[in-house]
Length: 202
Image 1 (cartoon, rainbow, N blue to C red):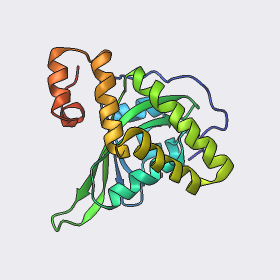
Image 2 (tube, rainbow, N blue to C red):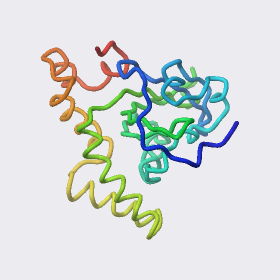
Image 3 (cartoon, helix red, strand yellow):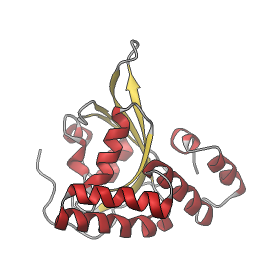
């Protein structure tokens, strides 16, 4: 497998934003399954993705603390949502909201994780991107621990919610303003995000 491109292109990749990107990983984040829309968005084939760590699509604009919070929640067996900027094979990007669920066997043991991803409204990106840039700048200048402490302080003092709640509420708020602003979708949004990831959206 070739490594992700060193040249980052500030250009969004074209993909079918009405569809749900799905992937499954083992406990260590190794990709076990990728659906067709995932391969379309990230520009890798399924064969290239299988057996690779999920961070093969990690964009350098993403602060590490966002993934740390994610993995801590998953290891506790908690469902989790995140706003993520991903890197494609050609160096382009795509933004998604992700719903992570924990996979278990018949004995109740955790065997891996399933991620479902959808496109997000532009308003979400405009609000989350400056925060991610700040966290990344702190990380580069002062280290990951300082970035983590700032993130905790920001969520507590300015948002009053944990990261998962912040992401879900931000998505709901911006969805109501933009292309998802229809009476039917407003009712669905109020019921939570399961309809969004598991049902037909548009």
